[in-house]
Length: 116
Image 1 (tube, rainbow, N blue to C red):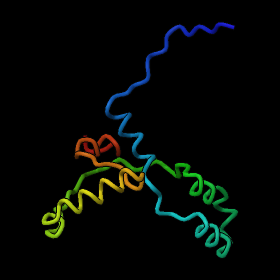
Image 2: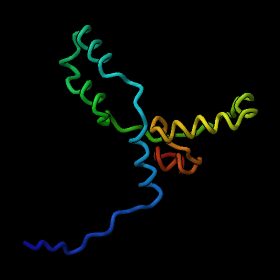
Image 3: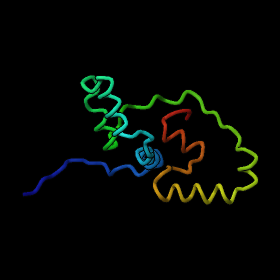
């Protein structure tokens, strides 16, 4: 059977879409079992029936608010004095999938849809 599509544009591989995909690689600090116990203990399971599932299977819980402004704090002196240690640690975390990045300020704006 042949299916013809009259016009289908190729998928975008531009910077915003590629960086936006990085957002979903970020690890969650939440622990599903801890939330399950807390919801059960407080009798809130029926109020939030899908929360534990969403945390466990990394389902998006909600849309992030657009960034209103960006603040860049300077690195600590100890980090500036030991750039090789910080760079090695960061590179390992990114390679293990525990951290997304490293992003320039412009790339960060694309990822989080703010301050463009």
